[in-house]
Image (cartoon, rainbow, N blue to C red; front, side):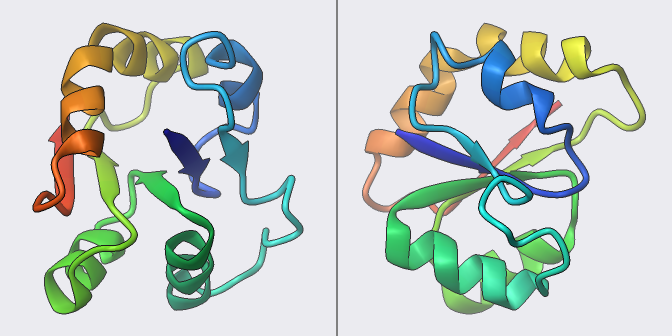
Length: 110
């Protein structure tokens, strides 16, 4: 399960979650820091990533195009990087089931 963290999330999440989400990346690490949402969407779909973001635009893209890619939308407002990491750790089983469900496109966590 490859997660792609959007620019509104810290690049530190990759290292904080590497033990439980190996293969995760941040868009800045991939040279896509200034990319448009639709370009990130296309890249993620082609490369097998699930986008993780706080950006509601990805919800709209998910409704419009379906998956791939899948989208995990974090509804946690302004919080620390550790809080974001904790949420993704606590919901690992739910994220795993979402990843394995061929019909699922959007998962909201909060």
